[in-house]
Length: 292
Image (tube, rainbow, N blue to C red; front, top):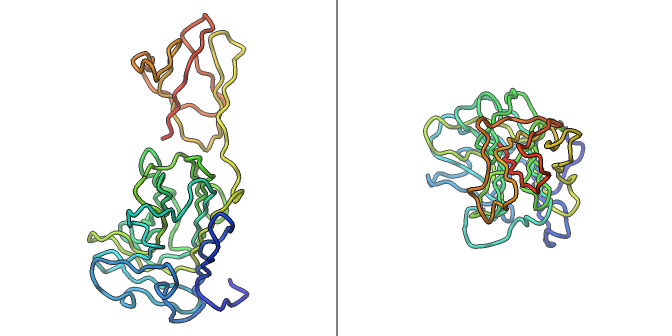
């Protein structure tokens, strides 16, 4: 519930990103003013159909009506899919993107918001059973009743490759982000053109922030010697869905990758589990930890 009325629907700051936290704060407070009327926001569709066929603004919300349509109808900031080398978002800074919305009905990936920083891709894809997020190992579903109003947010600590997902302010998932080096910027709306993908959704706000010290730093993996000889202790936050895939002794893997010793069955380790190393001579070693 908003308590103040802004004079414009989007606040786009002219100062460099590094000196400001808010890049875009879109609250749809002016009836009839569609997002494409704002600086740096592009309405994008391959269909050639007008924005007003699928979007309207009234009562402090952006109303998306694409449930029965074929084709994608997205809003892009500075056209993030233009591969022109522009550094719209700086991967050396913290990033946060969030939206508040309720979906009346949805089919397939009916609506989305996402961002790119020319290193990784951060997504929230809304489907009937919840929100799909893309991580290094593929899509993961966060179950949530999308027909109820919720706030959704992802946070990216600077230069970390880590992404965190929040629903209504609570952390629900954390992991390694998916690599994507071609695009830079962000977008939202209806992004899938294939038949059977669409939604009727009411967006309350879309907000993007970037700057130093915007989010808490990423948690760290700790490695320590176990009390048992030939064991080490690996510990990391329980929100990291990771697997220890292999290890090597004596030889650096960069020099001789064949010297990696593979586990027969890859274990899924939880926080605080000990990993037995098949060696009792206290030689130097290397670990490879893979996010899933």
